[in-house]
Structure formats: structure tokens, C-alpha cells
Length: 532
Image 1: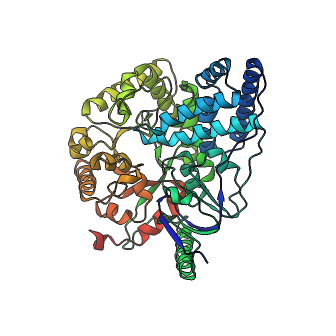
Image 2: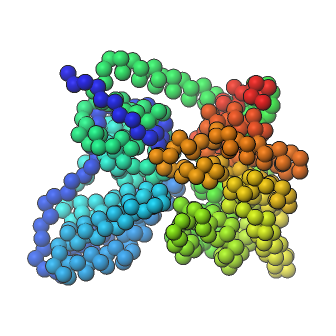
Image 3: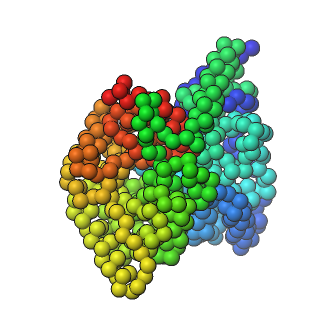
């Protein structure tokens, strides 16, 4: 009987699952050369078109966030920058199979060696594109994982995740991968346990396995003791989820009776269709990057998106963040190619540098403000002059709308506290209507540890004393100056972090919709007297 093999990785989507390993790496073979450069070129064009249609169909059947992920792949397939060099290689004597494989291998290598973790994570999308076309060229039919299996691979692509039936359980265990990948985001949204970074020992693994995606572990060929421990941990996890679900429809109140406001973070308007407004206090963060995807959005497109969420909120506050492009969110035709995009033209800096684009978003926001309780917040503000310049643009556009007789409102303008400079000297921003602490960026900038880099994951901790002191200082200044302070980063929905956040004085948190129940349950367990 084989001895148990226990491997440690990085948790990417929490949960527990047990089942057979299914190696999802796909080997393509059997390509038949076409005999002429013209025939090879035609075969490649047809294969690319077939792959594009398949992705387009998957986009139509996928929810908003998943569809946006697949649109990246579709845009890459339709980009001559990939197909063109492959066609040139065919003219030089390569087959369509060889030309496409070599071109995509080069692109993938460039993404994998990038310094930016965001671009590294996108390599999985390029591998998916590569495989789609090669599979079509060779006539291979992709195998589907059996229900309840643990998908095991070096990495997997979003399309494979979306084609897999997760209704009967299952999970994902990757030798490499990233917690910031598109697949990881999909797994968290669907509640699929996922662990990345297991390394080469996973490649030859087979048989039954136990995946602990709460602590980032897998046990292969488990012993009876492993099974007992796994069942106990899994049952405790499920019981905690069940207990938390009882709190979803309740107001968030601490054990000693203090009411805490709990808002939701949303990435796009479609998400509110699955949220009961009575279960939250409004929207603490509506991202607008989804609009700045394939093309720059016009005013009407933006206005409709903002209005939908405001009307859904039924008078409860909705904080919409102006586009936070740059860093790990590049936008074609808008962001600039920089050596270190996290420390370059990002967020409000980029918006102010492109006022012709920023003014379009401002007008849409002002018009939407007439349809609900809108608050607007500016990302990555580091100095007071950035706030003042943005405020002046809002005033100018409001005046123009008034002269034109266009219905609009004047929403309060606040700032994200995510740059250490703003957290250290919040008094520099006394003109702001409110502060919203972006714990993700604030933590990684304070600790100089990227939030999506597993090698420094231990450093990227909201509980670090330096981070906690900054948060407490911002809250204290807000109390003195009468400026409302909230937190809209991932920490707000982390039950382990909530006691420290409340101890720092926060009374307003914003969390992912899936974290609402768990956050409220964690709040109910906190006694402010004991954590103060």
C-alpha cells in the first residue's frame, strides 16, 4: 500500500473536497501536413475562427465576470499580432501546427517571465488559446473531467473551468498557477476549492486525494488518520458556513450591541441581480474597470451602468470609484507601458493626465446621481492637489450640464486611502467628503509585498502592526474632523481580520457579496470592550 504524500501549496479558493485526481493537461497529436503553404495558412485561419466561435458561445452562456475574462482570449485570437507572425512562419516552410505552437510559445514565455504578477497570471489564458487552435488543427476532442474529480495540472485555463460541471463537487490542484489568475477568481465566485503552487511532485500523482483549500494542502494516498482529520476539518468548515448563513438577512451587530454597517463590493452591474438589497447597507465599492475593457466606453454606456445599480439600491448609498486603471489593470488605448506600473500612472494620476477621457466618466456619474444616493471616490490619491484638480473637473462638468438643461446631481466626492502618504497624513485631505480604506493596496505598499505573490504572502498581512496603526490613525482623524471612514478591501470580509478592524475604530465595512453572511457572523462574535 503506498505511503501518504502530503504537499503544501497556496490556498486560492477556500473549502474542502475529496476525490480522484484528473490530470487536465492536454496532449495534442496527429496533425497531418496539408502539403502547401496556401493550404496550411487556410487551415490555420479556419482553426482560429473555430476557436473564436467556441469562446464566443461560451461568453454568451457565462455570467458577467466570466464573460469579461473570456473576452480577453477572444480579443487575442482576433488580434493580427498573433496570427500574422504565424502566417509568415508558414510561408517560410512551417506547418500551421508548428507555426501556431511556436508563436504562442514565445508569447507565453514573455508573459511568464514578466515582473508583474498580473501578466504572469495571464499566461494561462494564452496557453488556453494555444491549445484551442492546436486541438482544432489536429481534430482532437477535449476530455471532460468526471463529476467530483480534483483537476490536477501545471495550470488550467478559464474555458476548461467553465466547461466543467462543479454541481457535484470537485476541486483544483495546480503545480503552478496563481491566486490572482482568472481561474482563481472564478473558483472563489463558484465556491470551488482551489490550491496552487504544489510544484513538480504533483505531476506524477494519481489516485484518490484529499484537498484542503482552507490551509493550502493536499494528501495523496491518504491513511486512515488523514481521512479522520480531513473529515473533522471539512465538517467544521461546513458547519461554520451553515451558522454564518443564518446572519445573512440580519443587521450586523456586535456581541455588545454596536451596529456595524456592511456594504457590498461589486465589479459590474449584473452582480446586483443576485443580491437582495435588504441584506446589505448599500454598495461600498463599485468598480468601473469592467467598462474600460476592449474599448473606451462612451458617456451613455457608463450612465446606464451606474443608473442600474443606483436604482437597485433603492436610496441606500452607492460609492462608485472612478476608473482605477493601471497597475495590474491595463486598458488598451488608455494605460501606458511602464517598467513598474504599480508606481506609475495609475488611478487618479492617469485620469488627470487624460482629462478628455475622465470628463466623459464625470458627466456619466453626474447624470446618474439624479437617480439615487451616489457617492464618488477617487482611487490612488497621494496628494491634496490631485483631489482638488478632480473636484474642479466635477464642478466644471456640472456647470456645463446645468447650462445645457441636463438632469444631474452633485454627489459627495471622497478618496480611497490606499497610498501610504494619504494614510500617514489624512489631515491633508480635510476637503474630502469621506475616506474609504483600500486595504489590499495599502497593505502591499506598506509592506513592500505584492498581494498576489505567494513567496511573500506571509508579509502581506492586514494584521501587521504598521498597517493597523495607519488604519487606526485614519479612523481617529475622521472622527475628529467629522469625515466618515469605511474600508472596502478584502480584509473587510475576512472573519479573522474583522476583530482587529473593529478595534481600530471602523464601523463601516464593505465586502464581496459571497462574504456578507460570514462577515456578519464574525461581527456578531466580537465584543468591542474585549478588543479595544
